[in-house]
Image (cartoon, rainbow, N blue to C red; front, side, top):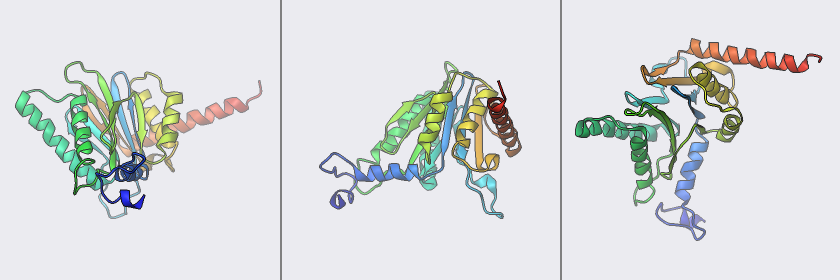
Length: 246
């Protein structure tokens, strides 16, 4: 194996590109991220590592806006994410300038996935070590969308999905509990999925909500704490109902 993981463009005899697989491993070790699509809202949530006391928390954002109607969350290497986000933002503005129309969510997802794929097929570069969740509203139909891309350059559309650390646990939770929701219920579902893998509740969670009318809005810590408290109360009530005699 050692001979085949030195160069990114060399396949191993059993058909693997080891550098791409190592990039996927970097994603699996990154922070947990979840996206949920509702009927009138899309929600992104990410695990937030505790910041140093003297650090300004505003400068440590893991959910970013690409355009007025599109946002992105990622798991993996944050420095790689910054480069990818800047390229995507330039493409969004370039599209507006050239075509005089905003990009669709699928268009910018294809662009990001194409960029990630290009870095798996060229000599002298390495793959982007991140997976992205891209959400937004179609500027023509107003329909919400959620897409995922990974370091190999593949992308797909989802109703709800998770990436990063313990993403399988979150995905199983979403598969069991997902139903078409709107408004506050969609936010609650995303936070419940994150709480499956994140310790100590609201202070370690970053959540952003996008609606067609108001665009992207980051939830304040107090708002997240209130929703977490509500979820805990519902859990406690369900447990009590199970233990209650028939």
